[in-house]
Image (cartoon, rainbow, N blue to C red; front, side):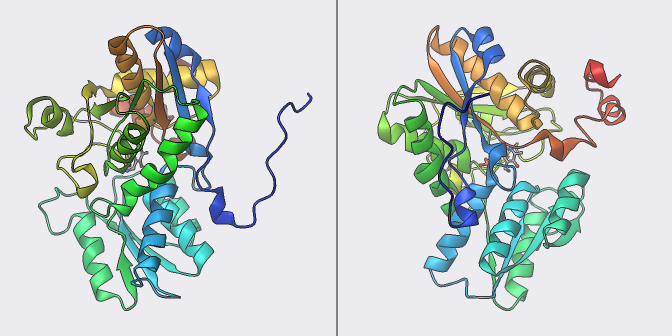
Length: 335
Ligand code: PMP
């Protein structure tokens, strides 16, 4: 096969591998919605998720403010992907990383963090109001560790700045300034708020949508002004119950509640029909993009986020026993 586009020139810094991810037209979702749906391939980042961007911006911000000194330690509470991003950035810049994670997260994320040289601290899953919650535990460890900073991804707005300054302008350029809508789910809210602000700065008429999993409170907040959660979801990394600093003032125009079954159906179809192996938050985002496309009408151009790689979930989403135990459908080829 002949290469039609010249390959990019070599880079001189491994951290510049973060961002500038490809955008791909998703055929099945576009057909289902009657418009063009594009996926931003965040699994192509070095840590295989969208959170590499937040990790890099948070660390650069702490350096610029002079709070992170050479040889220092970065501490964070995370569902996993931010920890993976922070561990890689820490290694590249000569810092140590301590990652606090609920023990309910995927086995692959834990093994990956250990492999990446992070010090991993596992805590029982607990509500945010509990002092043992992974976020509070990570803040305490940071306070008690000499030369450490707390990355604080939920309320540190360097997180959403990553998306204002990188993800949004990339999408705008890749879609040649013709963007009608953008939608994704929220964990910290950095992606949806940051891309939302960033795209609206190019064109205030871009519709920004929120795809909320069951068990999260944001759908009700944006629809009715009340933080109220119903149901539950097995999706990792998304599902927020409060307005984080990153979500404050987020320009959300429309919102959809998406079930795990709908998200999984897109994970299955994108794998079987388009050769993409993704995690469940990507499936929920694509289901949201199809819903937004139907709302905006035929011929519109919509972008969403393909947040992380499915290889991170071989023991869960791609494991028939795990799926059956959760009462979720098993991909037919897995039996
Ligand atoms: N999907 C996955 C798999 C994630 O790990 C995260 C980050 N928590 C998100 C989506 C949501 O991103 P954000 O924190 O920017 O809202």
